[in-house]
Image (cartoon, rainbow, N blue to C red; front, side, top):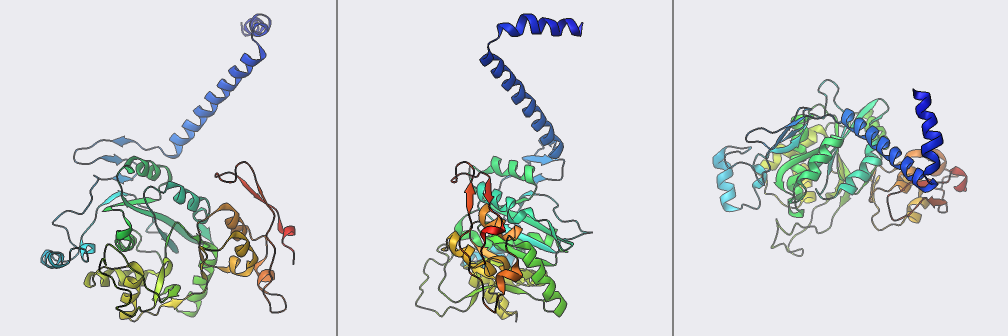
Length: 401
């Protein structure tokens, strides 16, 4: 029977179909097959049975919890006694709303209590910026372990109208997003950092070190782990607060509407784009924040640390490079390969240089006692360079010593 059917197709049907139609038919069949395979893989990887329940939006059986959307915490919830919160909010509501308890709108257990991460990266992000989080995942966040030490990356967002479904789908797909029930805005950056600290203490208390950063940085996890391991050997990691030390005016327009840059002296503070802390420091900053009026993140955190006797470590391996072009980064190869955090939006070109190490660090940082300077490596784009396409870098031969 099968032989007759095959003969019928070859002799009667196929000769009557033009080459164009046959190509279209085969293309449609291939697309259908590819979609079927992709759908099956997605179901297997992210098999989540969503059910509706009373009083809640969605509950996922895969331990992802999506609670009702709320722009603030409930009126009777406070980290301190209710009368303390009420009195402080009555006088300065803009400065004390970090005392409230906030709901985790989207949350899931990301840390194994039996095997906590050595380094926990708390990446604060805007809800609408999926591309930024995606690029961070593909670059810095793609590293999960180094030197037998586990690394965990978690993104933190607040609430923003029109992003609810996108954030929920992203959390289901990647499992690394925590959404907290507060209005996400630039005025709430200090609050977002404190709530990320609060989540770490509640859901990942076994982590040893914390990297707090935005998704607009290139974090070299292997270098960070090596740096922390060296600190641990000499015993200097009990209360670590490391980053780029600054002493310049900084403000939060929402928290400080009457701010006058000429009316005060600005104490040194760790820049807010990234900081490296021990979990003991995170715990201390979070608990001490309850007795301090909320203001701009960098001086807020640094002033608490200074008051508690924690030294602000001015770490030159935190590189402010927002105004540097690729050529400038590539020429300073030693700093590029040894930097812990580079304040620059992640991109595949720079990340490939950092991760793959086309130039050995020893050769890049030594040579008659001087740092080598190299020309720009040859870079080839495949497709449109403005889009997120594959990028191919030439190998080490293009780096001439």
